[in-house]
Every structure is written in structure tokens, then in C-alpha cells.
Image (cartoon, rainbow, N blue to C red; front, top):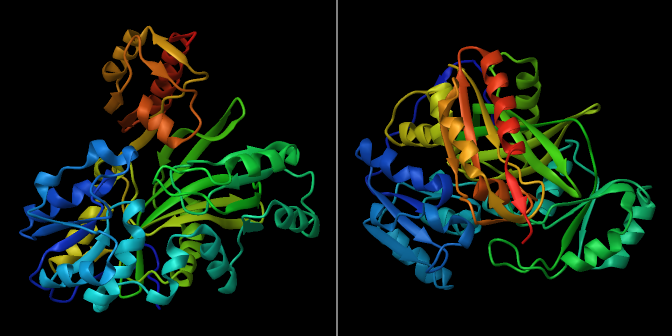
Length: 430
């Protein structure tokens, strides 16, 4: 496999086929494929992993956008036959819940545009993912994946991590669902046994859990597009997270970085290695990396576009997105190897410090009047119950704001204003 250096050269595609682009679970950002493809004369079809989307994605599903909707009913051979009848030009995952099925169908229907089949597990299961990256000679976070608390205890002892800060999380969920920090390892057994067997946001039972060393540094997300094993940068963002009481991995902000930021080049080299290690050859990937004092280590990879509708905000920041790169590749147009930053941009995630009944939400009406306001959504009204913010799903259910401006200082000032407005919210007894 080859990897493109950021900012060097360009790519053009081979002549595409005539069938539709099949989007597996076109939810979250995957819902954006339909309009973008139709605008360029590319037909679309949906393949869904069940008759109803997972609750976390239900509001984003627009079945009317897809003339053909195939429901996978558990018979892979039957599903492959139905997709093959459409003579598709590609099969891509729309969001995390569609990754496994997309990886099963694509090699059997469009083998010239698929990822390495033998490594499909490494593009979904975080344990297999880390093993593949480690086998490629790249550093990863020390971890074990098991359903046996005693096996985890023995590993902690061997790894010298007894009494250290730990992270316990499911190997197959997303959006920080079920991610728990255990400071000093205190009570990790209780956390492990309490989480084992839990039903995650995709309706799957967590029969194994990852136990990891807690690593610190700056966390980045690197969004890419690949074709024929060649990889290119679409955007790089820096996350800021905060502890919300006992809950770790609560999102504070996400800030778009310029391509000449010193972190970008180093991250790109590591991420391209990760993409090769897990067998990415075609499509979008969402790669989260912690840049530690010892260098970058993989947090996780999603073999699909960045979720939460990020591609439409990325267009504002860079004039491009993973959705747009996919469309341009399928229509034979030139693709860049890197990206440009057109404006300073930040996503501010709302945070509820505790659970309760919300009052005073009118103070948030000031957000759209902020100088750098680009987009915002607040999903709660007075009298609604708000859960304490534990993860990204909670943040998105509360709301967020996109701030964009030519002056980075203005973006920072408006960010501080949003946090001050949140302090005026009243969260009463449940």
C-alpha cells in the first residue's frame, strides 16, 4: 500500500460504474451522502442493518432520499444477491452501526473498491484494531480485552498497572458510549463487572471489555479518504475534553487545525500507518489519536465518515468534506492530498454538570447572536429532564454550537460567553 504525503500532488479516479452508491446505515453523517451524490448525477441506495435505526441515529434517517432500501434480515447471501442486482459502483458505511455489514458486502459485490477482507475485524473491534496496529510496528495503548475479571487482574499485575489510572470501555461501541475512567484503578473490578453484559447504543451486548492504561496528551481526530490504498487528509481537529464529576471523556470543544500546524505532519504519518495496518483501501476513515510525550498512539478508528453531521461543518471550515471527496472520486474528478483552512472554527459542546429538570433555557437564545456564530442547536426546553453529561451522545442530545470567524480571538471570546451562559441555567431536582 502507498500513502500520500500531505500537500503533495493530486489524485484522479478511474472511470466509475453506472450503478448506485450503496450506503449502509445512512444515518448521522451518512445521511449526507444522498443529496451530495444526487447533485452530481450519481444514484443512491440504502442498505440498513435492521428495520429501524438505533435510537441514537433515528432522527437523522431520511428513507425518502433512497429509491431503493434493502433491509438486511440476517441472511448475508440473500443481502449480497440483492445488492449485486443493483450493480453498485461502491458500498460504503454511513455510520458506525453499518461498518460490519459494509465490510462483509463490499468484497463480494465491488471487490475493486473495498478494504482488505481479512482485516475486517480490525476496522470495528478496538481490540483487534490495536493488535493489527501493534503488529505493524506502531505504538498503541497498553490494553487487554476480556470478559473475565480475573484475566484482567492478572494482566494489570503483569503490565505493572495495578493502582494506575485506567479506562474501561466496550470494544465495539462509539461516541464515548460506556467509556469510564477509573482514577488510581480504585474499584475497577466493580466497574468491570457492572459494565459487562451491558447493552450498548447499538443494541449489542458488551460481552467483553477493554481495560486500558489511561494516557494523557492532546487528543486529535484525523479524517481521511482512501482509494486504491492511497490515503489523503480531509481535516485534522484537536479535541479538548474535561472531567464532569466522575465522568471522563466529556467533550468541551473541537477545533479545526490549519494544515501547516506542526502537529499535522507528524499525525499524518502515524495515521497513514494505522490505515495500512487495518487494511483501509477505499472510503472514509475517522481516526482518533492521543499525542503523548512519547508520540502518537491510536485511540480508535472508524471505517466511516466523521459522525454528528461534521462533514457539513467541515465544508464551512475547509470547503471540502469526506462526503465531497467520495463524490468527486466516483465522478472521476481530481482530489487533493490535503486540505486548506478557510476560517478559524470551533465546535462547543454543551455540558450539564448534573441531572435534573432544566429551567432558564432562554439564556441560550443569545448564542445565535454571537459574532462568530455559524450554527447551533439546543434540544432542551424548560421543564425537560437533562441527564448529567457523561459522553458525546449526551452532549449531542443537549446541543452544541459551531463558531467560525476570521479572528481566532473572537471565536475564543464567544466560547467563553457560551460557558458563562450555561452557568445561568438552572437544573433542579428530578
